[in-house]
Structure formats: C-alpha cells, structure tokens
Image (cartoon, rainbow, N blue to C red; front, side, top):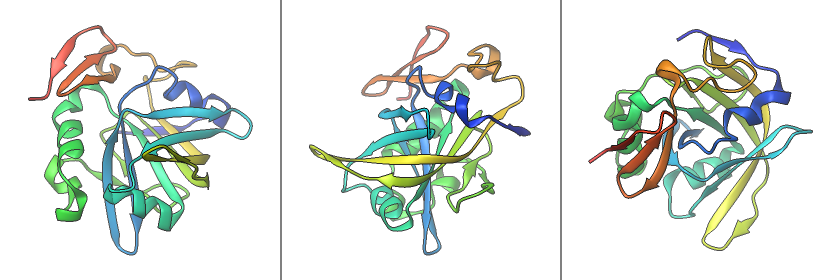
Length: 183
C-alpha cells in the first residue's frame, strides 16, 4: 500500500491508543517479526517509542545487536498474521513467509517494514533499560510513514484501519469494539 511521510511530531499518535504492533528487526542477514502488546510513546522531543521484549525472544538479540527496530501498526484484518507472528519463533524459520506478510524497504534503517500494515515507525535504539523480566528498548524515531486515508492528525480507526488490542490469550478487541479470537 502506498505510504506518505509523517511529521515526527505526530508519530506518538500512531500508538497512543495502545494497539498490538508487529516489530521488525534485522541483523547479519536475519530478520524477524515479533507481535507485541507492550509498545508506547516515551518522548515527543525527540520523538521516541519504547517496546518491551523478554531476553529469551529471538528479536531481543536482533534489536540489541543491530541497535534498530521498526514498529509496524497492523489493521484488524491481519489478525491471523499477527497471531502467527506471536506464536511461532523466528529462530525456526522465516516469519514473513509463515505469516504471508510482505517485506518492504525501510527508508532509513535496516529493519524491514511490513507492507500490509497501516503505519510504520523506524527507530534507532537510544537506551535499553531492564525492567523486571523484560528489556525496554527506547528508540528514537528516524522515520515514520502512514497509509493514505489512515491518518488525519491521528489514526482514523475507521473502515479498514481498525487496530487490534490484545485482551489476553487469543482474544483481541478491535478499535471498532468487536471482540475477535485468533484461535
């Protein structure tokens, strides 16, 4: 889907409402997708996003070693792919192939974008504090893009742009208020 550049001062509005996101990372010829419910804006100036990832996850080391990640915001129609990326390990194979998602070239960093997603935030890791059993990778946004029609100062959350919000287990709430299950 065609994307347009987004003013970095507004990128927090892509994740303020707490959507489940797909985070991509890449290092030494390997890339991965991880499904995360723990993503948040952490600064406006500079624009920063934080993602919490357990050290046992394959993506953790890819992000730690590359110093980069991309936050991709999926729409509710991608539930099956979101679930697959959250229940299969990238150590065992290619999650892009397993989920049917399409790699897209990033504009600044090395971590790929996911073409089917409605928005992307490319980040360089600024810090990575340990918080209990997770590392919170704080990334400075170096580029952001959004699908035409999906953003009018905030995500429109209409039509095909409804986002997913993890309720626990295999249940998600769409931004339209519908509870759907991946299993």
